[in-house]
Each structure stands twice: as structure tokens, then as C-alpha cells.
Length: 327
Ligand code: PBG
Image (cartoon, rainbow, N blue to C red; front, side, top):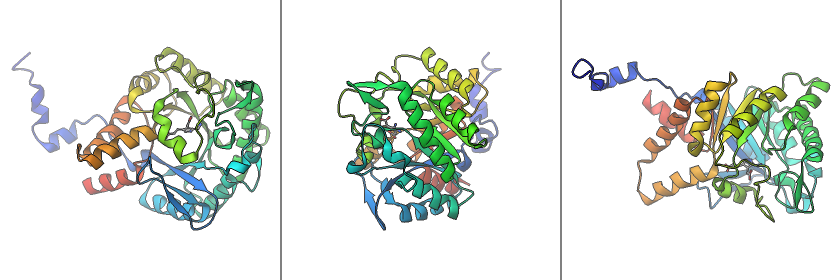
């Protein structure tokens, strides 16, 4: 009771505030997405995501090395697939000389200690821009799982440390775990996009990979953003199926889900601060409407406070600079 209890006491000085702070953000919490394109010596900018580029494998390797040298523990790879290689079943994703496979091999060989995560889904490979095999405008679950499992094995064989299925098919984690075990990839980690909402915040990303759905939307597999219990079910099921890390995506609008999972589960939780979240902050910065650095750091810290231990963010490189400046 006031004045016995004055909450402002512990806020009096920076040192006291530091002493009683409840959350910390470290460089070791961050994973940086990295986009790949064919070619050599290529670095393409992306209109919808200023500061983000698509790299050919040689330059992706350089970028990965830079991130690693800054202390960023891992990267999450995405490939922009040539239109002529797209089909309905992701055939080219199985090519041992495909863009993802080449990049994984190169980066693993040159930077063995960088944690290499491979995003796994059919949409970059699909003529329909959907995350599964399409029949009569429906997404076919189980056949998609078989393909995803084969692709996961290929990524693991080439050196991926973490497979990150982002497709939201039912049972895919189990199918991937089964094939990895059968082929003795017992240490390959599965970081499942467990609670992935059908979100309009993915818009800028789909422009990066040219992977907009050619019909309909993704609401028959990605989750309804009105639901939280359903998200908890998804995550618990993925853990049972063999996921080592569960992910919530997007980030900021779904901190309630992150928090609930942190309370209800005992596995590490990743949060993906997605392209639309990035683009909004970038555009507000450009307009001069916000203190960019402070807004970025406040949002990243909010993920930690909610209970995430891993943050996938396009701000990773800048966040390292901000964190180092504060040391
Ligand atoms: C592909 C995938 C998407 C994202 C990550 N993996 C797009 C989608 O599901 O349509 C979005 C990432 C972002 O917006 O930053 N399955």
C-alpha cells in the first residue's frame, strides 16, 4: 500500500532498472532468414522489403559468413525457384543439384558451425503457389506429406541441421521424423511452424519468392487467426509427432499464443517476425515517424518477455549492431 509500496522506487536509476529487468535479448537468440536465387554474383533488392536481398549461392555464402562472424548462430534458407522448374508436386525440390541443396552444401562445407535451417514447403516450387499438391483446387494432405518427407531427407543429407516445415499439412512432422530416423539422421532437428496463421502479413515475402497463390487463399491449411486453443493443439500435436522446436508465426499479433505455449509446453519456442511486420517498421522509419532502433528492440524484447527463446527476424543483423552498441 502506498507509500509503503512505491513501484517507481525500482525505476530510479538505470543500474536499478538493469538489476531488476525480467527479460534479456541476446545475439544467440536470433536466426536470420536468407533468400536464394540462381546465378552467380547476384544480389537483388526487393521493393517490398528494403534492406533485404536475394543472393546467388556464392554471395549467400559470403553473407552467411558475415552473419556468423557477427555472432548470429544460424540462418533460415528460402529459395526463389525459376518459373520453368515449378510444377504441381515439387519435383525439382528433390533435385540433388537444386538451388537449396547447392546452397546447403556450400554453406555447411565452409561454415560448419553455423546452424543451417531449411524452410520446407512446396509453395516456392508450386505452379499454384500453394503449400501442397493441388487437385481440383483442393490441397491434398497425405500425398503432400510424402513429398515433404523426401525433400526433408534431401536437405538433411546435404547438411541442413534443422528442417523447418512451414506448410501446415496434418501429420507432416511425423512423416518427416519417420523418414529421418529410418535413414539414420537421428540428430536432425525439426523446428515446426506449428502455429502458423493465415495471415496477410506474409505479403512482402510472397513478392520476394514470387509465390503468391494463383487461386484462393491458404485458409484450408493455415490457421484461423481468431483461434488460440486450436493453435495450442497444433503445437502439442507437433511435439508428439517429433518436433524439437515449435514456432508461432507471425510474431507481434500473436504474443498471447506464444505466452500460452510457454506456460503449457517444455520445448523451446521460436517466433517468426514476418515480412509484413518488417515492412511496416521500415516504412514508418522512412517516413520519420518512429525511433527505428527503439521500436525494433522493443518488439524483439516483447517476444522474449512473452516466452520465446528463438527469434527469426529480418532485423537480425541490425539488432546485433544495436545490441553491441549498448554493451
Ligand atoms: C512458405 C512460407 C511463407 C513464409 C515463410 N514460409 C509464406 C506463406 O506461407 O505464404 C512467410 C514469411 C514472411 O512473411 O516473412 N510456406
